[in-house]
Length: 313
Image (cartoon, rainbow, N blue to C red; front, side, top):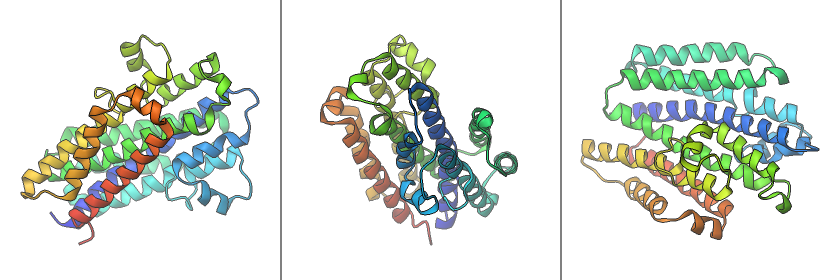
């Protein structure tokens, strides 16, 4: 396969996943702000940090406000990670590899772009935000559904899947980090009803509230929730689940091309660490530090895939 085609598929699905993930991050921020007494615009500082756009935001806006932060994350064209920017980048990549996609996948992508272009043509009013976030998540889900239901399970499929799960793992780690980085008001709130409500909001933001209750009987303990989102291999947004899929799809590419690359070793090492570490070990060493290292290693893997499969040739 041409590197340009692999690159287009990989980034098409990274951008589609990122658009949904940014919407989920906004949802997490909204839910957190509703649980805090005396919430202020500074609550959005951690959300912007977790999205990796805090410094870029400061270049556009002189001061931090919740309204501007949400607009910047949703629809600001100067922000390459805004939902609207991601949908446009994803569609552009889809158009570039149009002949590699089924009609159903292309139409779902194009319809997503058209609806969101209209939805985000102007600032979204606060009462309309939950509905807008739901539309973004639903449209991203329709693209994935069309893709899974119509594509051959070949190298095209594998590159798209790898892009999806690298982006998803990045997002889950960032949403978890929001909780520890800024949203817990003080150490004294740990274990309080406020703390529990915030953890519940995190679970709802990654569509894991009900599945968590099946595993842990709905008792909101930070260690259990971190375990669920990091190490539980059955939870489709956990880091462990994402890396099972990444390793599996890389293995198929290894068989297809008859070549093992540094990316395979890196992915195997990350998966092995997730399989052997306990949540107690992670919490003892520091959840924030663990997540920072994970994001760095995840980015390293993405770069190794780009270089190994010669995406720009």
